[in-house]
Length: 152
Image 1 (tube, rainbow, N blue to C red):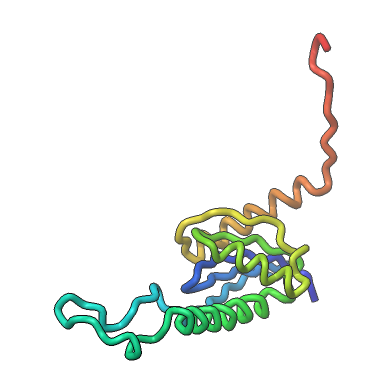
Image 2 (cartoon, rainbow, N blue to C red):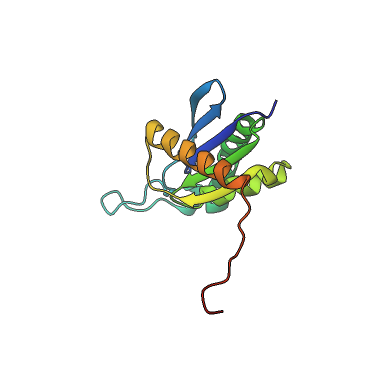
């Protein structure tokens, strides 16, 4: 059942999720197995360079990185599958990549907002998600009527 709202703080290393339900809140973490930075092994001024055939090619390393990210994003999408609405927070490109993955899985219409946010704790994320959904519900039922100014 799609009765809850979710907030996600995501980067390429981990995803923190908060699910807000009428019964309360719960949180979840998903950690990726993606390396922090791709580097060629053995390139060191002290040790010298390896021959080209001893170092993995950049494209094979990129394929491995993409494969790890696909597994990671699939796990995050699976956790968000039953959410009625989702807010995505994060510092880098992972926010947009998650949004694209949600659209690909026909869940893109559930994304309410994407916001830039630096590192957040579980409590900070929960407070931000509660604040977002309480203000969006307050504005959802009200219609804004433009009123003319004095003298016009």
